[in-house]
Every structure is written in C-alpha cells, then in structure tokens.
Image (tube, rainbow, N blue to C red; front, side, top):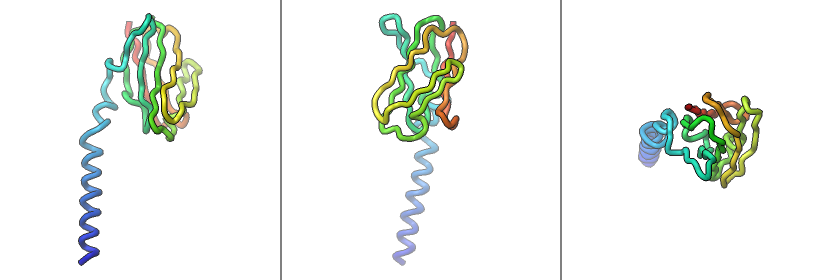
Length: 130
C-alpha cells in the first residue's frame, strides 16, 4: 500500500512538471521577436539578451546604422550558453556565471546577425532593419 501511494505521488509530480514546462514560461518568448529588449542610450543601441539554458529572446529587432552593443545578462549560468559566438563578426567571448557583459558590434547595416553558444546548441538572432 505504501509503494502505491509513493508511486502515485511521483506520477502526479512528473505529470505536473511536464505540464508546467510545456504550458508556460519561456516557450512563447523563445519564438517571438522582441523589441522591448532594445533601447538607445546616448546614441548607442543596446540589445539585452539573457543567457541561461539558451538565449532569450531568441529573436530581437534592432535599428540598422546605429552603433550597437549586445548586453548579455547571466544569472547562475553554468551551461554552454555562457560561451557566445557571433561568427560573421569573428566575435567569441565567455560570460561570467552572473552579471552583464557588453559586446560591441559597431555599426551594423540592414541584415540578420546570428549567434550561438560554442557548441551550437543554443542560438539567437538580431534582425537589423533600416
């Protein structure tokens, strides 16, 4: 009888956890473009991307022709998203487990800039619009 109760509790926890992961949280954030994470301060465009278990938001929209910095924000990040690559600009950097790291991109013309972790498991893109 005790084994049945324990098995039932574990089953409820597993089902509830699966439901919580698939219904809420980051799934809608991952697939949608975000303009809320882009600001311009003193003539410099700042694109904020959170790095932990991937990059969020995965797609950002920014203005082309403006000096741009990507600000990576980490908070207890120990996975491969703490090592960022932007191959088209020959940029690669390691992020601290917690804090923020600014990566200067210079002035980017209209294009889509893609970045990944060093393993290529997680990706992000910034679309620069004219």
